[in-house]
Image 1 (cartoon, rainbow, N blue to C red):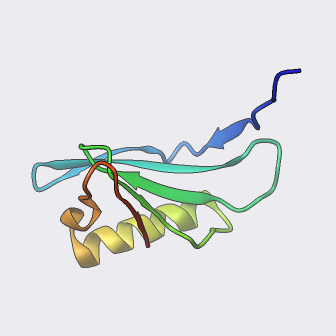
Image 2 (image 1 turned 180 degrees about the vertical axis):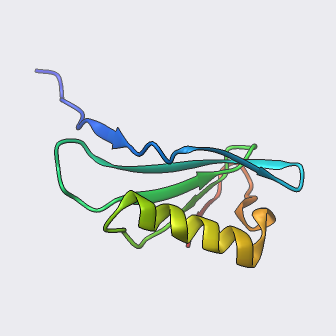
Image 3 (image 1 turned 180 degrees about the horizontal axis):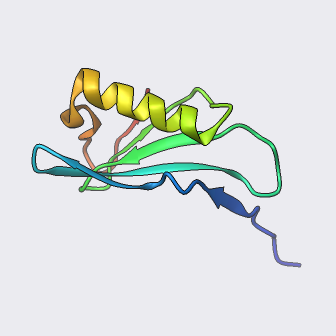
Length: 88
């Protein structure tokens, strides 16, 4: 019997953000058909990933946290080596 992977719901707030000639991919997601909290992950152009350990009640709250970090620390804070994962 094949394992069934859970379906993931992506927020409409997901997408690419460019600043200072750098682009990151913002992913906000949760388990589909569930009122679970939202996860936030930002991936840089080289595939490095920044994942928040905190979950968010709404996708808007997750995006607000991304934007707050972008404004306070700059887009370079999301730059990682491809094999590294950074927890925020």
